[in-house]
Length: 358
Image (tube, rainbow, N blue to C red; front, side, top):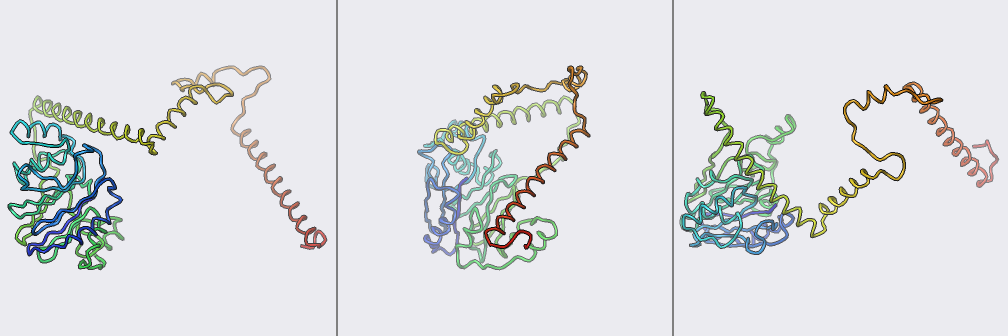
């Protein structure tokens, strides 16, 4: 988890200190590194939680020419394949991070580069040559991205509190959002509880240039592509299955990497893994009394019920178990009542009053 924020104003003169204050409100999202970079009409900032390419993954990051700059939160699952393709096409990549992959794809394809990305992400790209700001959110909206727009000026952040660090943004309740929440326990569309502050919807991008703002949908779930040939359907299903398997393998590799970091750093995740291992060993060896634990196989319950009782042994029935439970509970209540009576007598003796007067 990282945090990104920034301000774009087509008139220029963006206050870098304002963006720095916005960035500080996101410190909990990324304590490992932070940076603020100012351009003519835009200032970008980020807070980083280092996961991939720890030494050289610092942001904001640019392409070779320094034309486009990115701040980014998320993870691109297919970045290694995309990186190989970029190198084959003559790009010069200086890091091993997925962030650099995005900005080089933008260099090639502009906003359409988002169609190549598989993962969860929210990012902002400032195109210095075109003086254009691009905001993008992943297809399912896993990573958050909020923005406030007024007269072509945009303030954006990973959390609403980042935008509220700008004193020019009003703090007014959005009554439509409140009505949605009270009726449906959800807020729909691009609304938030703050009037004027919007969330970029999943599968959408925002383009800002020369004071003009365009919010565009780049992906949606669709079933219009019908396949009538059985062999073609099998082929497409196999291709999707292989693609999903490759992505799952990459995600598992990254998860194992993060788990290894947690174990080395002695975090809660590492300790939890050790505790699980200890628990499994205790289960395998038993608890020092009685029989060791064993797996219950199908039919065990039936065979156990068919076994003859040992001489002098009777198996308790449900009613007997209930009677025993009531008897034990009654004894406990009696003991508690006795303690209460003794305590009451002690109070009487300490107060000097005879028993029975209270």
